[in-house]
Length: 230
Image (cartoon, rainbow, N blue to C red; front, side):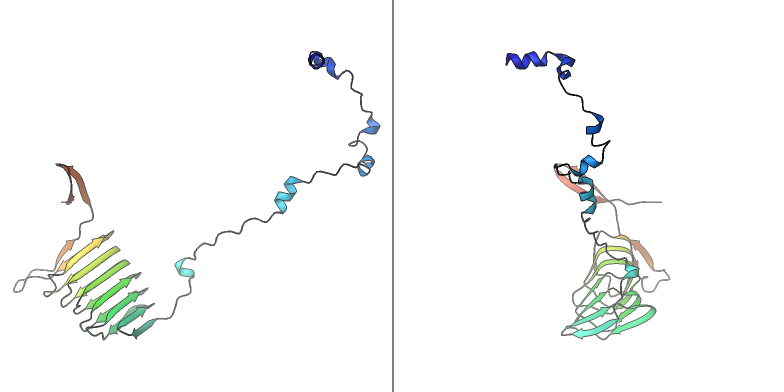
């Protein structure tokens, strides 16, 4: 150990015993010496990285305008009507449903659907600018993920369920004033009430509340509708 410390204490003089390499022995000045070298060259790490395959790009979903649209479908299977892929402004699709038959309407745009008879139930999803005229239903009418939706109820519909609907106008007739409306994650929903019989009143427009105020009172969470008076 004393010999090791003696060498370390030499400082810069520790390199005095090293032999100076002659220029004729330098490989960077004499390329011919490289060919005779027995030491294998270090693989190019950068090159190996560049030659490696890059990960496949993730496939992004195609926009709605680039998707191949399926042909319109109006078909009765067992006790269910399927109304799909109608996209024609002003086109009227009439459904002669029976009381034991339900109706599924999906991916229909700028279309008018008329259910002239009493059906069991109706479900509507992913439609734009759809207008539907309903006589009466035994059960409920469900509307999911629709925009600019219009509904006219002439008879009796016990329940109307609106979920993720943006922009809807619901016209209630004199027989459908007892319809219960449930809304969730909806915006710009208006319910039109018919004028009272024997009066000259106009149809009354009633917006469905969108904003709720919540606060704690006596250890209980209280929710109130925020009314905007202007």
